[in-house]
Image (cartoon, rainbow, N blue to C red; front, side, top):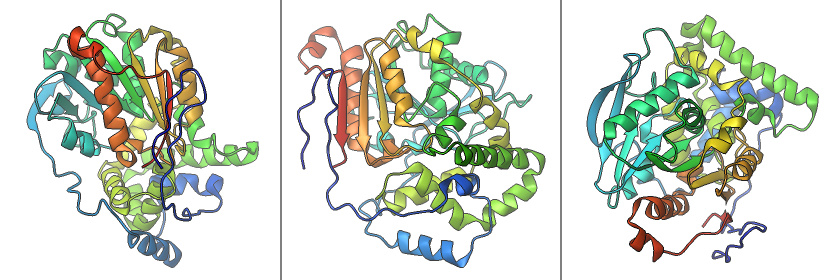
Length: 382
C-alpha cells in the first residue's frame, strides 16, 4: 500500500508493510529482559532452534555488505585527550552522524551507502566504541560525549551542519545543546533524533511492561546485569560468548519490529558483541537517572524526531514528548520498526534527512522550490 497524504496537526499518516509474518514471540519479557538484552546466558536447544529458524527466513538484505563501507579515516583528539576515529564520505552540505550505545559508525550502513552522493557525510565512533580509544579516566559521562561531539564539529570546519543522532548519540546531542547553547542555531542548523529520548533509558526499557511488579523486575535485572559486568567483566564476556543465540534473540526482540531482515539483526548483534563489556558497564551509569527535558526548549533549529512504533528501548511516547517540546519540530513514526529504524526503514528516513538538509543547508532559492513537509507524519513500512 502506498503512502497516504500527510496531514498537518492531525493524526500522522500511516504506511503498511505488505506480507507481514507472525512475529517472533518471546514470553516473559519482563523477567528475561536483562539476559536477552545483554546476550548473557547459556545458549540452549530452544534458543538455537528459534535462531536457526529465524535466520532461514526470506531476507531481501542478504547481499548487503554490512560494515564494509569505509570512508577517509582521521584520528581526532577530543577535549580530554581521547582519540576518536572519524571517517568522511562524499562532498557537499555537511551531515554529521552520531551512533548509539554499543554500536559503531558502521551501523549507519545505508546512510553511508546512499547519502554521500549529495552530501559530505561525517561519521565517528563514540569513545570506547569501534576504532575510537577509551578515555584515560574512564569518563563516559554525557558531558564527555557532548564534548566529543563538539570536537568532531570543530574538526569539520563547517559553518553549518545537520546533526543526525541515534539513541545514546541523540541523548548526547541534547546534552550538547545544554552544554554549548550557542551551537544549535549557530553551527548546527538542523537536528535529526532517531530512536532517542530525553530521560532515563531504563525507564524506556521497562515502559512496555504495564504491571508495576513486572517493570520493577525488568529494571532490577537490567541494572543487575550491568552491575555484574562491571564487577567481573571477564566472566561476563565468557557468558556473552556462550549466549550468542540469546544475544541474537535479544537483539531481534529489543532492536527491531516484527519482521526484520535476518541479515540486519545479525549485523547489529555482531556489532553489539564487538563492544567490550567493560565499556558497557562504564557507559551504562550515564544512561540512567538523567532528565534533559529542560534542554528541549533550547533546540532552536528545525528538528526531525523519528521513531519506530515498536521501539522497546526508547518508546514512541518519548519521541512524542520531544516533538511537542521542541519548537517547530516534526514527528516521524515508522510503523512496525524498532530501535534500529534507521536500518529497517532507511529509504524513508534518508529521504527525510535529505529534505531537512536541503531546507537548512541548501541556498534559500533552491530550498524554497522544494515541497515543505508537514508537522507530523506517520509512515508505514514499504
